[in-house]
Image (cartoon, rainbow, N blue to C red; front, top):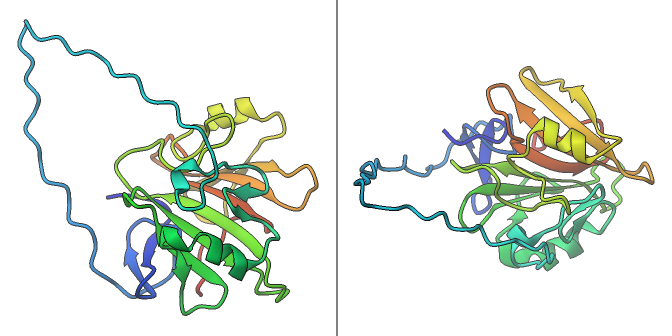
Length: 221
């Protein structure tokens, strides 16, 4: 079953599907994607030759309508920047399908291919209307999808890859059993980039930019 944290919320219905997404702790259930059908195994005869196809280079252009192009930094994921106005940013990315829920200051949606989900949280404690967290969570059978850093790191990147790319990266335990993080602080100390890992998976199952101690586990609680 696909994974990201524990439960999954749809945008249209303020609901959650138990299993794997950025939002944990919600209890309502909604229809979920059917399990993929089995496909016949590929049989290659001795005379056949399989030619590898090069993967096109993905450039992060920060197209607001295409989350796959979003650039991940220590202060933003694409056009969703820490400290920016929540409502204005939501308007900017509206074409992605990300929308608000009935819990205040939380917006949620999926990538067009359902490969990952997107979570944006506003500053509800300070009531400033500013964004305090943005996260993407793995939600498919394929790693290596979604927004990437300038070093091409993101969902699916291993701890070793992240630690090697950032001199100030630190591995930390989570308050949630079975979860760990690799964090990279913003130079201004306002926010930090967080790669989330879960026991049993080598690659990152979430990528977040936050102002708190660790990514929200139950943002609608």
